[in-house]
Length: 444
Image 1 (cartoon, helix red, strand yellow):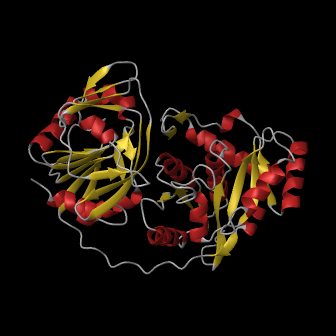
Image 2: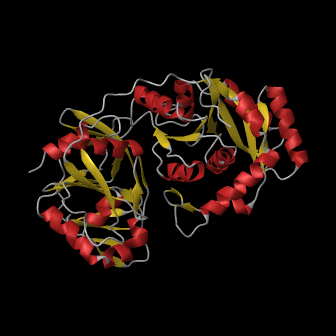
Image 3: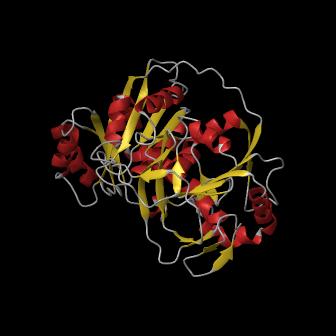
């Protein structure tokens, strides 16, 4: 079955009244259930989240893309959506937090993304302790903001057909299509890590997604879902002229400890040369002839012992950095380049030692929020989300200002030691390569 040549195709944003409603779980099941029909399903995620896109990719079999209206422009989000949707039969966008929750009121929210892309909204409602009272909730979400089109609802944690009957009646009275429900089932639960849904390799994700895809068609009308969300597709922008590929060899850490990357960031890196991937966990040393090292975020604290035990890799990276190699490390990468990581259990493991500092998970406190960095004439945006503490032992801050989404200065820094740059901020440079260009040109 293929819908990709049609001028109209199913495309929708899955939202919820609040976090914890089960929209990610439902999204994963829908992605797999639709893919089983032979449809090419293109997933997207509102906001800066790395973990949900990882799960989307596993469930749909296609890379999931972030659509973030703080970190990138509306034009960039529209172009990204149009480019990837043009190559798919169905586009599924997962919202973030509650439908209208943005960095500043509804700015950058899932509702703002739905309005920008002009796509219908499906609301996922936790109806565990609710029956006909869902009617005013649906009415409010449908009518609060005229810029969006809430066309359907799917109810979560509904265990009986009689319970769903009350919910369906509420939908009828409000003018929202009742698309079905998902029962409460422990087999559908994906454990959460402190940064979001877990990506532990010992969890049987495939079994969870398969169970969801088995269950959904029994209680959710997928045909009706595709029908009520079929709308005109946006015109795909003309392809950009191919950029000349640089001569550099760019080494990117990629394994269970370092996996927080944006596809668009990696695509920009490829403009500067050949991108090669390596594992600080299992490889013996950096790829030969590395010209630029990128250590993204991840969960190095969960693999601190294994990272520390790989002494040849640590020595290889230290030698590269001390020798003047250009490196950029963010969050988990910063932790790895430091002197040591102390786990939540109080165990300290030596790390690379290219930065004059160490990090600790003891007495962890969450730091969260959008960030804007000002460097020379460049403003680049990103997101900070971590629990570790940095123990500064003489780190030098680069002359880069850091503010939050409201423009207020925050204590977060970008550190520089020789040609090594590091910060807790996960930056998005997928729209503009200037940041990488300035890093390379700032070589001392």
